[in-house]
Image (tube, rainbow, N blue to C red; front, side, top):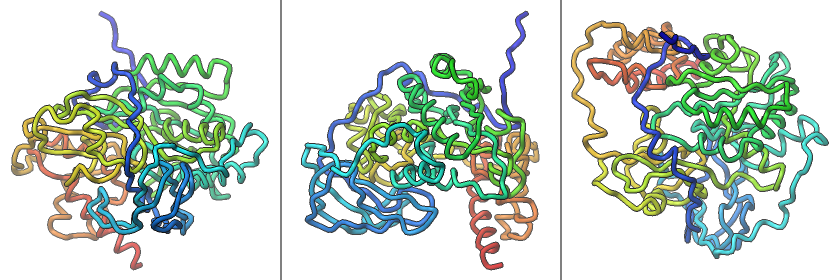
Length: 444
C-alpha cells in the first residue's frame, strides 16, 4: 500500500468541503468598464483616508483621491478616469456609512500623467522601496488589507530573516490566487524579491497548498535560478493561509502569544500583494483593481474576474450571467471568514477576494443545541485555545476570564464553529469577547 505523502502544516485546523473546481478550470475574465465607481475612503485596516478631490473635478486613472492620515493607513486612487460626481457618505460593505468618492467614468482610462515606471528595484534603498509601496496604496490582498508598508517597516529590536508569500488560498470556493500564480508567477517572484530587499533579508518562501500542483510547478520554474527562494508545498487544510499557521508550517517557528510575525523572524504577504508590488515598480500604477472569484450555486456562470475597485457587486454578478437561483446569502470573501452582505449595490473593495452567492439550501445552518463537551473545537483551534470556554465566558460577560484565556490571540478563522457538532455559534460569541477585551486593554 502506498503511504500518504506528508506536507508541511500546523497542528489543528479543519477540512471543509472545497468548491473550487467550478472556477479553477475557467479562464480569468476582465470585467467590463464600469460607468460609475464608488470608492470608500476606508479600504484597509487602520485610519480612513481624507478625500482630496471635489465634486465636478476631473480625475485620471491612478490619481490619488484619498490621502492617508496616519501611519497605519494607505492612500486611495481613482480606478477610472472621469468626473467626480459626489463626495459624500455612502453605504460600506461593513454596513456603516463611510465617506466615499463617486466617479463617473469617461471610458478612456486616461492615466495620471505623473505616473512613471520605477524601473530596477535594486537602485532603491529599503526606505525608498517602502515609500513607493505606501504611495501606491498597496495593502494585503488576501482579505485583511493591512497596509503593506507597515508590514515591511521592521522595528529595530526585531530580527527578521525571511519573507513568506501566502499562496495557500485555503478558503473554500476561492480561486483568484490560484489563477494569479498560474498566469503571473514571474511577477509574484519579482514582488517577493522587492519585499526581501525592503526588509533586508536573503531568504524567501512561497507556500502553496498541495491541491494546486500546476501552480506549484509554475512557481518552481520561476524560481529555478533563485537559490534564495523556495516553494514550499503545504497540506491542504484550513486555515493554512493564516499568518501564524503559515509561519509554523514553513519555518517550524511559533509566533508567541500576543506577538506578531516579526517576533518569529518572518514577514508574511499574500501572492496578490507581491504581484501588485512588482506591477507598481514595472508600470508605476498604484493598486486600483484586483482579481476576485464570483461563485456559489446561486450564480449562473461562476468565474474569476479582474475587477476595478468601486464597482458594485451586482455588476460583477451580472457579468457572470446573473442569478441562476434566488440567493439567500451573499458573502464578500469566502464562507469561513467572509462578511455577509445586506445589498449587492455595495462596492468591490481592496479586500474583496470573492463574491459568494448561496441559495437557502447551501447556506443552511441547523439550530444550535447544547454543548456536549466533545472537545472538537479545542482540537481544531489552530491557536490551541479552548473555544467552548471562551464562548461560555462571553455569554456570561465574564470578560476577565476571556482575557485570562487569551481571547485576543483568536484569529477568528471559524474552525471551532465549523467543527462543532452542536452547531453553536462559538466564533460570534468570541468576537464579542475580543471587542470587550480590546476595549479593556485600551482603558488600561
